[in-house]
Length: 368
Image (tube, rainbow, N blue to C red; front, side, top):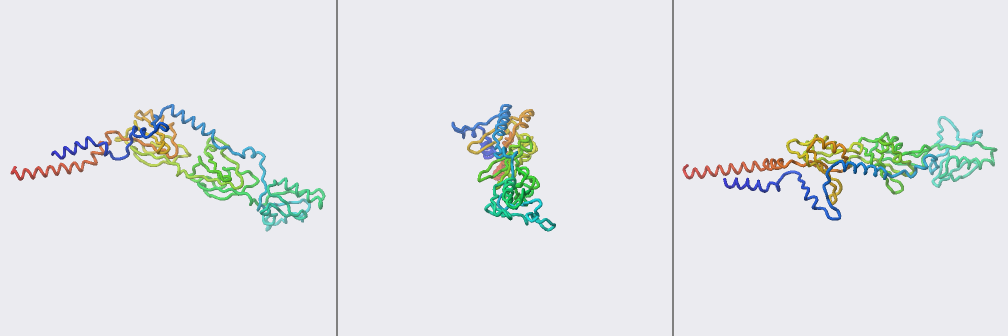
């Protein structure tokens, strides 16, 4: 009997050190901070929601702007090496590409060489690389005046081969696209790839240009019509649409279904994260201690929601989570005790059985 009572006493005094499952002690976390970098647990309140809204406005103002935006209105295609140029001289069929069912202009046109030059009859070799079509038309017309009085001609691109952009990542059909005489923007390039894939993360589309990578919030273009995020593309650009699998929210603790959640269109509120996890566990959860952990381990930002009253969930509907946030619902204190007892109960039962058998043995020896 003494052994069993001693075990129960030990359990009662030291149960906190053997609580199973995730544990969180606010004081222990705050003690990890320093004077230069304190760690504090911030209660979720209307003030925090206002700060969040202000931060979103500042982030929208800090979005990268299209450096080619001013050129869009007057944009003209400039001939590049490997393009094929078609020249039509009216009333002079001998200087025009022969037309016919089996004659493609891109095959029989005037190819631009790697050095940006092109050969044309009676004119010779012309430097056309980097020039616009009107500039080339004037150049050829001036040279032909030696042979033709008042030449009338038209210059077109028969095949756009010189300037290209690449689209990779979460699009239906990643591919390489030519830049044509129609300005090509990020959304145009994605549409040419048959649209976004089901796991596309549109808030962090990467545009790599001349060794530098820009992050475009294409969702702002879809939702808010922010055209500054729909950049005009140029030769050599690489557009990469990342996967939202890399941007999850983790819900742990006393919820019905612990899991990681994909953020839909780059957004998820705290209420959505809890609701998608099928809510609190009624018997064990402590709604007064709902935490959101954000940032690095050495410098976390921690928020706390006291959802003891149901109206506090109105705050949760407005509190926006960020990628890689961890939502933790703490257990009720008595739930920890119940779990400890459940785990130790088989041992206690074994001790009682041993004591009972020992007592029976002593009684048998004593003839009782």
